[in-house]
Length: 319
Image (cartoon, rainbow, N blue to C red):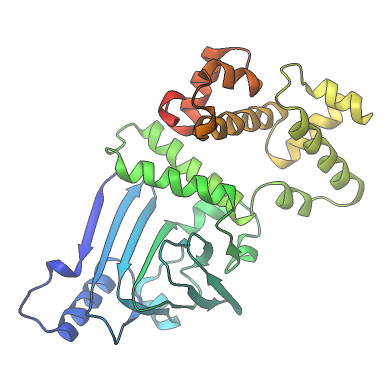
């Protein structure tokens, strides 16, 4: 990973505010992408961008007195960018705009998925702070179907996947560059996966949208049984099938259609519970082995390996 910083403080000091803004925007168009900005009429011009590359993705942070941004058909034609951006509002002001005929409005901690290949408007206050996760179109479209149905829909600040995504991106931005291609690939896949869950492009709602009638109802029942009993070390596809009076093969087949197997779902549920418990200050006196057992893990070494692979840190490091 390599972090690049582009700030108005680095511009020639002899320029007046208007000249500094015009130069900043010209550099932005040439080096980043084509967007037309408007600055606050009340505050002096300030703008700073940080961009960290993670494989084909870019984690961006932006702050300043930019009050409006627009991307028109001429801008799209000028740079040819056709990726997606997850816009995350980290400031106190509301960021609102329009894309594909939908109005969006995201407050502090909220987010929305937008496309660089569609006309876009965004308006904030006099001073705004936001983040962008920039992804090539092919990366997301290869991962999720009907993604454009999720454009310009508000993602609440209480969305668990969004919260995890923000913390994971902060972890990557703060750390040293990843050198291993396997780790870069893992980080990229984790970010894409979390965006899918945060936007609803992946998860139970997306799964049910692809099924109809009895199969959709049965999938929902299977998933609910798994959620209710994942911490039981004895849970199995056989036990769930028996409780719902289904065949084991049917349980495996219907889960396979969603792209996530029985074992993968149970492991993820257990890891998520352990992660929540480790981060809860009320559990500081509990041993990590106790938390692992309460989450359904009977093998502590296996738990440690899976936790590190999933979250990029040891269980003790997550506290």
